[in-house]
Image: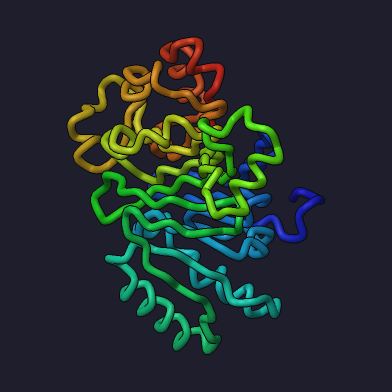
Length: 284
């Protein structure tokens, strides 16, 4: 039991980088759940650590049980603790069934499932606040799935106005001229479960400061064509793309239960190129 947590009912690791904290845990077919407290957002609800309940906004990548099973638990806990109903985004294709799931739990538990559950489609943008926005993309899995990029928005002076005196810039602005442009800085990206196409089709995944992703399989004996067909990635997929990862930190998890943590560490230590190994944090 961790003395810093009121109830230590689900394990998770924690990492802080560049003023952002990643907390979570993921094991294939068991449970996946992540959050970034500073952004007040979470990704997936395969389980629900007690102290995650204060996070008010969640993005569910897909509706496999190890990613969504704890949604009713999380919602019920917030109601029990008299917190405001959370906002939960789910793939649009599963919206009706997720609402039915919550309705069933309402009947079984006799407790109201109070939450604002909203659909997600690729291309959607959800504003967290004036400075931060979540972009929704398609990933490649066996059921409809989404990935997420949380970006910081900044206003930058347009190149044609750089170097002008302050008074001239003020004059242009007051006359109605748009003197700035929006610049986006990808802060955190989450792939959920995906085949390599989910990465390749969404270049922002490679640019986010922190990337949270899956590496379900690592052994050479596991056929990549079959792994990709079932919407997952192999260690060799990362090795082949080593030069594309411009991320500062890559949190890698969702390893198959076939593997002991020591095997994961040893294989990746032996096979990852040094520049990729330096960025990668293994959560096993």
